Image (tube, rainbow, N blue to C red; front, side, top):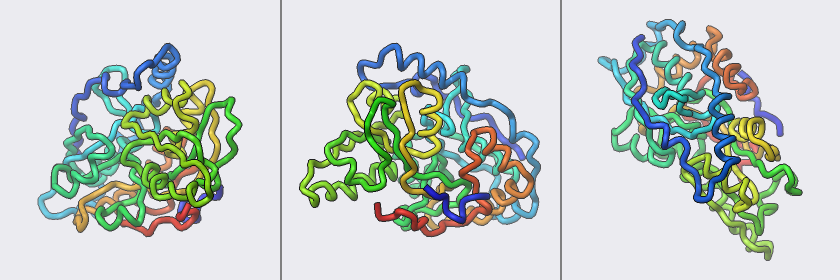
Length: 317
């Protein structure tokens, strides 16, 4: 599937301690294959430092609201690169979102107070003021833009993967999923897309697909590997990583591209500074270094935008 035109191009405190146990939660009946996959996943997490050399940009920092020195950042830990994972020390967070957040903080001279939160809990908590900014591969959709402000930093989107022995073909229409069990993340655009289009099967006189939602990536893959689901809908970059590092899987196709951004409470005054910081990282080469580290160079943006309209390609699928 063609990537849209728009998609081509301080002081920092330690992250909060998080127990490694939360990373490895799986569905009941997880077996040896899951342990092997978890080990391979850990060994494959890149740890190259591409952020510490980033310098403060005073012009960008001046765009911050007066007196802003520290922000509370909510991070969704997915357990699978390029999303945020926990390294073997049980405390250190590593992932593409983390690198972008750290780099932006250094450009703006900010301190980050980082907290782990579930993916589905972050966006509602921004409105309450519990967090100042959230990261978790949040796709910028028109529905989300009504309640949340975004500053884009990468282009990713929706895709599908399945077991290598599956006879399923690339999904170009959700009606192809009729009668199947589809595993995906709770509170994601994938779940929303599937639920919105569930009627397609009934309209065609076919059996509806079953949407199975999980809060942990490991549980999604366990469900697929053990035959409790037929197909996975998730992020394009996350699917490509999983297929490269787990046996018996294959990537089917990209389905719908979405820009991804830092998430803020609607009406935030932080957005211009974050946008300037991302554009600074693009200009000085740090942006390219981060994407290269996480093998996501095909998802580069040429510039950051504030709450842009949802990309139109396949939007109504």
